[in-house]
Amino acid sequence: MEKHHRGEWGSNLGFLMAAVGSAVGLGNIWAFPYKMGEGGGFAFLVVYLILAATIGFSIMLCELAIGRRAGRSVLVSYQQAGGRMGTFLGFLAMLSPFLILSFYTVLGAYCIQYVGLNFAELLGIFSLSSISGAESFGTMLTNQPLAIGTTFLFIALCFLIIRGGIKDGIEKFNKVGMPALFIMLVIVILRSLTLPGAMEGLKFMFAPNFEPIKTDFIGVLSAAGGQMFFSLSLAMGITVTYGSYLSKKESLVKNSLIIIISDTIVAILAGMAVLPAAFALGGSGAEKQGPKLLFITLQDVFNAMGPTGPVFGVLFYLLVILAAITSAIALLEVLATFMSDRVALKGKTPDRKKLVTIICLVVFAEAALVAADGLGSNGLWIPFNQTGLPFASTWLDFMDSISEGIAMPLGALLMSIWIGWFVGPKLIRDEVVQEGNKISDGLYTFFIICIRFIAPLGMAFILYGQLVQFFTA
Image 1 (cartoon, rainbow, N blue to C red):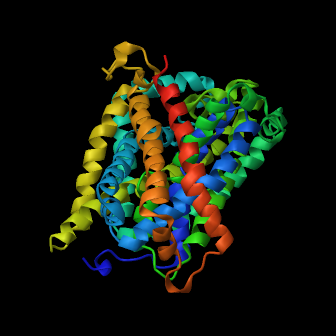
Image 2: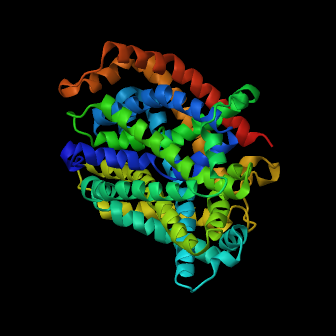
């Protein structure tokens, strides 16, 4: 199969906007603030930054190189890098996005509903501020037809984007979407920091405090590591897939660093938008409320703002929808590229719109189950529910535990060992230095140390912590 059957990015800027967009999603806006709250604030941030600079960089460089080297889907890319283990890693990398989309699209659907509710209050149609965030979210969870309908709407929006392909669909959207997301995020931060008590949230984030590391190092490491992988879109096929469309002329080292730095900045900015507001309303403890932080605590913040509340409510949830779409289309592209390449390898011309339609309908089928479950509010049967284990409390938790809890850290652990000790770091270096690009001896030595020692050891601890978190009642 020739690479021109698949196309390439129109520009390196377009690739970076899409790659950063895939990383900047609910993992930043939703998960980073509350996981930072659970991990002790500053202590979590320090561990996160160390992991991103070592494990995150080395894994991302590997994935971009493996994808560009083959110029094909994530499964074929791993297979070409090395036999049976490559096949296993390829399947793991496709399992994660499929499962993540089951709940990612539902969380995006809840944001669509909140945009509608805040906009209705702005127009005087509905008084959202007259009820608490808990009441509005509780009603939302139990309204199964509305949840399923808005989930379909969210997936339909993603379909309209990715049917245009990598250049005319994903790249075009992200070139507009990412700057818009950044502008909205800055506006929300400025308003969040003016709330009474907001400075306590900033102190929680940035005032040195290593006590959480002393009391529960594995817990903080696991939370920061799991968040890093989810936030950077690692071990879920996205970076390999996007790398497969990348020109040989582009510097993989430079692009890896730009993506990691950009995503980390946005994650910190998201924390500055959310945590000060949470402290302003709920004080210590509000920052640890998981999904409730986004859908209950923050809506209460908007309700307390008075006449301007609905304006910032619409703005904030539009921001989250935009972030969710940039990541969801990347997850869908992993599956779309796999299907398209399989058709092309048989000597046929892929009908992208048809393939994307099928994929979106399959994703909608699994997402409808999560939407109908309503975070456990509607009494749906869940596998292993009778065990009382945390991962079996809702369909969202069940899907999340398999993808983020097992498949992603396991895939990264095996991949680092596979590249570091069996395939060899030279395979990555040979791809990195294509078309005159360079990697310094010092950076290459750092990469070898990370991929052979730091990444396997760190991922082993992260996987252990994830298993403890998900499977300890």
